[in-house]
Image 1: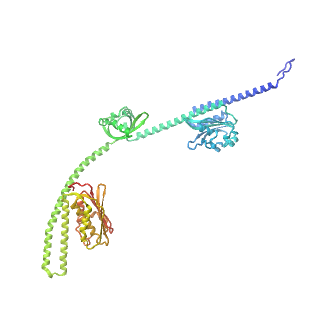
Image 2: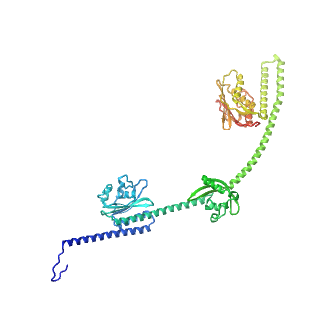
Image 3: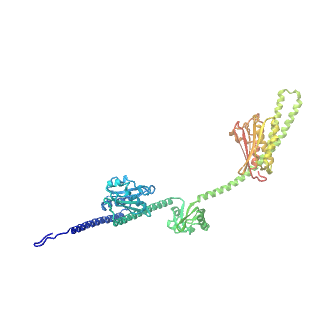
Amino acid sequence: MRLHAGDEPETVSSSDKMTTAREQAEAEGNRDALSRLRRVYSFLNMTNEAIARIGEPEPLFDEACRIAVEVGGFRMAWIGLVNEKTGQIKPVAHRGFEDGYLEKIFVSAHGSDQQGQGPTGTAARTGEINICKDFESDPRMTPWRGEAMKRGYCSSGAFPLRVGDRIVGVMTLYASEKDFFSDEEIALFKSLAENISMAIDAMEKERLHAIAEDELALRAELLDAATDSIFVHDADGNFIYVNEAGWNTRGYSREEFLSMNLRELATPKFSTLLADRMSQAERFGHAMCESAHICKDGSVIPVEVHIKAIEDRERVLFLSVVRDITERKKVEKELEEYREHLEELVEQRTLHLQALNRELESFSYSVSHDLRSPVRVIDMTSRMLLEDSGDRLDEEERKSFAVIFRNIERIDDIIEGLLRLARAGSRELQVSEVDVGAMAEDVIQELKPDLSGREVQFVVGELPSVSCDEVLMRQVFVNLISNAVKFTSDCGDAVIEVRGERIDEETVYAVSDNGIGFDPGQADRLFGVFQRLHGHERFGGTGVGLALVQRIIQRHGGRVWAEGATGEGATFYLALPCALAQGSG
């Protein structure tokens, strides 16, 4: 203060001095608050500019943290994203004095543990801004206080980031001063977090949209690569989509095809059925039918159509997968023609074979009948010679006569077998319901006197009755059981079993024995005429018995087969149809 001559010096009271100091302090505080507010606005503006400039989340997070530190004046800034499975908040960007802090701490969004009670975890869990005014005194900061104080973190603000309704992360700002965040600044930072949230929400939608577009493009490419035609149309038959095979194979451009209606594409015969097919697909979810499509040049292609109903907002669309079956129809026609020709050939061959069989049966009967006369003459002449010679014959000559008589007897048996075989083929079947069990028991009783004292155990199981010619079927069981008796003659404990059962549409009978069996490799010879797998000297017979069995069973529309092994016995099976008409065969 300057004094002029003659003036008295002024005195300043202590109260005036205190007022001046307070005003100066207030002015200084206002200047500081204004400076901080300017920094916050600059931080806000620059971050918004970054949002407009940057199109990816990670670079935006990094830039926001950088601006917070360099422009906003924060000690450290970081952004963490919430792991939805574990709840851990994992840092993805940070700037400022961090010095390994984020590696040393664990922050959770779960409220059940202490690591989820801090500002960042609470903001992630509640979706609300959370402020810590003083790290040193706030009890929530206990898990992180030591590391935070070492790095000069005194207060913090945690601002949740959203994508839609989900909290996906948190932006946390650390200040080197206690009680740093004013209400006005908190409101501004909240606005900033909301702007960042909108940005990452838009980025996520754009990412998903790009993925969806890529998937649609890939699907369209795959559909165009398909050889089948694929249509999407509405209930009125208006096309919405068609793949390349759909329009190209019918001679149209894509635009021409999409301007058509499904009823124009189908021939009149099938066009009237479309509504019913779509209704069926809508009721059951899927329908399949054959149709025919008209090409641009007027030609018609047969097709197989699979229709699937698809819900699309408030309407139903139909996806049709259409396959050209021209080649299949051509093959089917050829097969049908071949089948008709084959049936005609089979009928001709059958008639020819039947005629041959009749001729063979007639020939066999004639030959067998004609052979009997000379055989009887030989037999009578031999016996007359034997009687006339009397005691003049020596032992060797008598043996020669015995050989002649045995062979005459064998020839007579063979002739009888051939006659039976011929009669079996020519005799009309007299079909009736036959009690096979009683028949088998009767046959066994007839054969027992010929066992010559042998001990043979006969086991007769359940034998279902069947429709058949009783006389011929009796001959079948006589032949099979007598065969079993013959080929168990070397067994001290011979067992012969007869059993049967119904299997599907057949009645199957089996005759088993524990005799000498046969070589399975020779099984196809068993049912041939005069085919013998064992020598006549050891086991007698004519070689006609099994052939007769096969002929009788075949005339009944059945089948016969055998199983066995050398030294392990044999089983003969015969299967007859459950339903047999009168006069069959």
